[in-house]
Length: 468
Ligand code: KG4
Ligand code: ZN
Image (cartoon, rainbow, N blue to C red; front, top):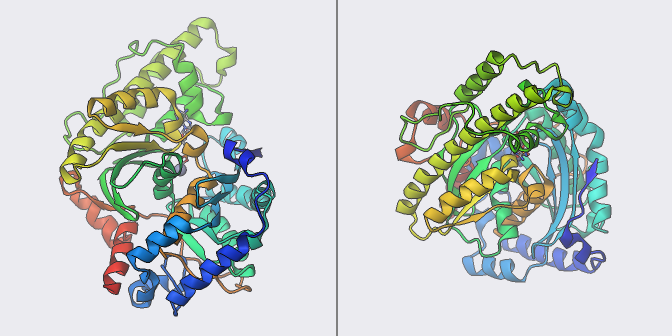
């Protein structure tokens, strides 16, 4: 288990115990403003029949009231993340101080089985979740009573895994009468940049690159996103992971860092891979074809993944390094080209945009950052990249996103203290962040996803319309 104490943590070794009173007082104010339970939805059992039950009072705070809360509050939120293969928890204060951050990684399992097996990942989450949350509280020198709310990832991700985090979050919230905020994993990857960069105001753009997602979004406001592009098959992180596996690299820190390291030794022009989707003048991504090109290049050079890179001859090693470097150059060039076009599109919609956020596990890569920095500078924007520990999956991003919504009055009331073990949670394993931008729309896909999976943005907008 990795326990990450951040630099802000050391400034907060002795958080003051008077917090519960401030927080409880604020909680009371909120509840008084909302005589009915302030259910913003995704976690409440009534959410499936959502709009009818979606209490209009849940967004009753006027703008000025919200601004007051936003500036004067002193909230402390626990964030829990179990959507994929990392079990993470963190505690964040509303001024942006990270009081604790704990991540337990399943990298060993990944290395052994070469991918995430949902049942195994669920078991691994269940084994460590109590310890991870307890460590987060202890490292912050707090107890559950000091919390203002619990935030937890409810999607997208693997149902079995999401369930472990949601069950834990509801148990804590139920036992300590705490509000609960259901968080969108990809929104959290984007919004954590606002914790790091205090000048980062809406609207901004974000490129979110991880193992399962490749998203280009325009963030117009909190909870209001336009999807400019997404992957039509694999995400870039998946391509890094498979390339690393086929090259016989050490996967214990996941494939991405292993490729990044080996690529430094290689010649990025040695293997001629073609850049995906050149003929498609949109902002979508595709990595399946590049993966195939890499596999064929590996086969044609007789590279044997059974021989670990540590035992490879120097000639073999340099051949693997050339493939790693050539793959990385083209994989990232694809990002660069799509970002450049997306910036043009986004500036047409929101000319005041100043920042491109790059986040998600792959954004920890130094080459990715350097290349995208050049693109962004060319367009006179600024790149915002969270530090690597906040780019890969973590609890801080969930706590912070929970905080942002909580301040706006978007949360569910505390669940009952004795919720049955077999309670059916409303998890959202497939959950779009926003609607597709018309110029980048793939009709077949958007109709399909819109019908089955309403986006976070559409849910929030529907609830806001109900109030007005
Ligand atoms: O965001 P994340 O931690 O989990 C998901 O939501 O998927 O991203 C994990 C992905 C993995 O594919 C991993 O190989 C990749 O991020 N990754 C990297 C680097 N660090 C992590 N890819 C390239 N370079 C890195 N340094
Ligand atoms: Zn992620």
